View 1 (tube, helix red, strand yellow):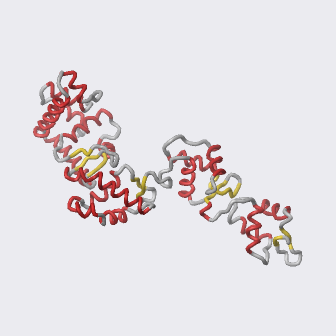
View 2 (cartoon, helix red, strand yellow):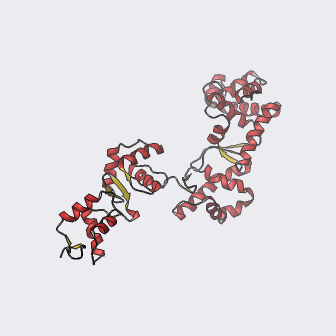
Length: 345
């Protein structure tokens, strides 16, 4: 048996109302049409926006009391999902779960949420996303709770695991004062609700303004990709990976990426177009500079093969390039008896 859509059930329930109530609900929630404001609806009926609000609320109450068994079953299914998600869930996540990208069904689905007396809408704020809450008493606690989580992450200065973040939150005076409202499920859901907090690919949680987990400019994106790769990459490969990540903003051209790599000391050229992070132990400089650095630390000298091996640890170049630099630079000298290369005196 095909499952009945939210649109079908919403329209069926609305038809039980008076004509004006039907029109106000259909217009306000944008069911099968453009969503209208309370003020614009009021102008159509020559009544105040407050009067429109009253009619809307009373009409919703009528539907709550008169919903048929099929409608109630679908509302209960949504309610159970919210409860299983810790009692709070972003509206976008909820919509994706039940109606995906079905725009006609979406408006009817949002309307249906309003007809469930056990659910409360927590309107979007600077701190949290638009949320649906199972226990209305917790709705007012979400903003201060998200601020507390943000404060904890700011103090820690690096991403935290969910368990560590919750553990730190439980030590806060805010939590201790409101402990009875915070179930384990709600605690686990809070980071998902906060606007300023995002989950990293490793599963930890950090602040969205941190460039290492949510890069905004090209240099930050390069650093992010290299850190994630854990190995040196060619600038063209870096450009491809930046595009694949779907970061916010314009996708940089390969020439832009290359220019940023050259301009930032955090990135070290270790081969033809290949860059690594300086924090991995790579040092800037030519092949001759690398040879000088190696030989300055090993006074007894090294054979040509040993030198090649050491250079290739920090540069992705051919053996011939190392040999050419070794033999063409006057700063290097080979002892014919021992066959060892040293810095020339």
